[in-house]
Amino acid sequence: MIIETFILSPFQQNTRIVACAETKIAICIDPGERSAEMFDFIADNNLHLQAIALTHAHLDHIGGVTAVYQIFPDADIILHSDDEDLYYDLPQQPLFMGLSPHQLKPLGLDYETPPPITRKWTDGEVYKVGNLSFKILHCPGHTPGHIILAEETKRKMFVGDCLFDNSIGRTDLPGGNYDQLINSIRTRILPLGDDFTVYTGHGGDTNIGRERLSNPFLLGM
Ligand SMILES: [Zn+2]
Ligand SMILES: [Zn+2]
Image (tube, rainbow, N blue to C red; front, side):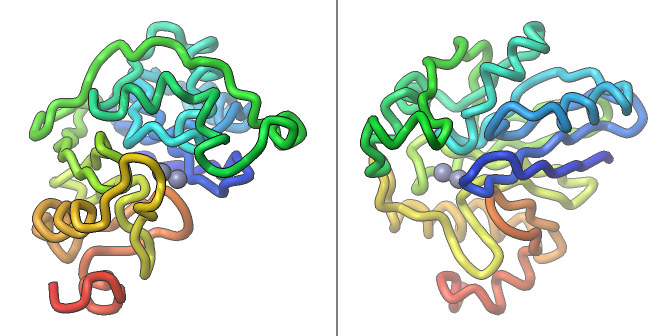
């Protein structure tokens, strides 16, 4: 299994290329921005990009979808339907985050409407990437349509902004709900097992066992 992380945007979001080492079939999880370095990595490793796999539709996770799509127009763009409105609202998202229009351009945040979603996640589906099998679990709370991808054989999960090293995702943005997020973590993420490595949307990797013990938001779970 190939996992390469790129930190592209001012939001310090982790964009990842995840691929099956045997078949070279790959997905890009949450392209935050355009990146020549990421495109070089795909080319240098002879990877075939099957899809842009989105955990959720916040701007720091989808800001690079247009750029990836321009280079890989045959790749699926996959999102949960409950985040579709947020996705197509990308040009307005900086305003939700309290940035005024004249601040946007210097920060590179004058986003255009991204290309159409071509496939939607279904809760509980198994999504194949070459010989890898990702279980897709709907985990609302940070956004209504947040999903995680869990590879049960390799014991690795990609959780976007649900769970971080010693923290959890914010729930004060439109569509956020604290109780829902805690419930998603408790009933969907933690039961996958303490030995799972957790690849987060921001910051370093962690694992479920460590978070269960030391994450102040998960005490007693
Ligand atoms: Zn987010
Ligand atoms: Zn984020």
